[in-house]
Image (cartoon, rainbow, N blue to C red; front, side, top):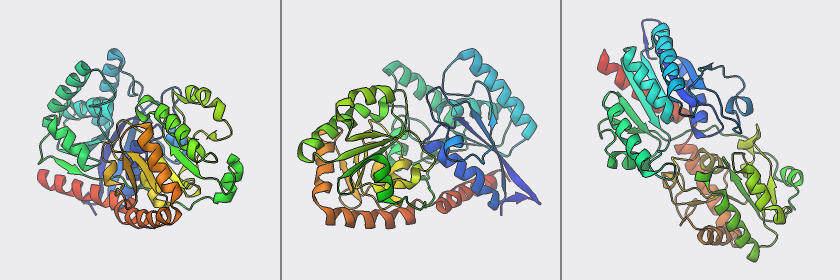
Length: 384
């Protein structure tokens, strides 16, 4: 157990907002799980944006964060300055040994505040990166400059996958000695009854079911998802697509799929989302950019094979050809990969068994917590 005397090590964990997604899930696991390892955590977050689902409401209502105005996703210089001042005051009051930041804006404000408040250990996790698919080239250059400067005063940089670390190092952010790769960890969730869910969604029991779980935003490419499904229906006309999630493209996607309303189902965010994967034949991801998607890890835990674009650190989750299929980022390639699995039930079953076994070994919450405990112990040893 890590502590000074009988006092737990104090951590302030900072995240821009607790919207439904991988970063919020990881933060919730760490905030709860590290308590048994001698740490005391204060979770600080901004407000969830309009149109976003609140992770705490949907998945973890037992978590009680400190909500800081101005810490959310939007960039507003005056509000950001006020948020920075509030963070400095909070850190001086809490006097943590470790500040650990998550997501881009919280990583900037949280680390600057930690330097001002003289917090001895400063850690930042890159749950992905914003180097491609989000901003114009000049904004990317500005972001890279800021991250390079912040990395110099950061005790450790955490990447959720090897490719995330490689991309950031190639951009000149951080050094190899400061980077550590710690993949996400998710809980093993009992799966909902497939017949029950198919009845709820209006999907015949013998129809192929394709599942998408995620935010309906530009970077996730729901337009590509819909076009791929149209191509799948040419060869598999009874296939159904179930979309779990919401976002700023939710209404657009509903409108664009109106002619397919009997074979595309929108169920929004649900508090049992992690238990839905077992009802699907294939889980699909169509993004332009990813870190290491928790949705694919949850699918693996359920023993459901995946078809995904070959982006970010997805390859660390999906062993191509063994636990799922990775493909080019085109509707044609996605559709053909899904059809390959729908045509071959024995192959799907074998992939399901393989992905389940691999996920339990690599992506459990115990491993996530142990890896962070090890990192913190190493950093604590450097300042003792």
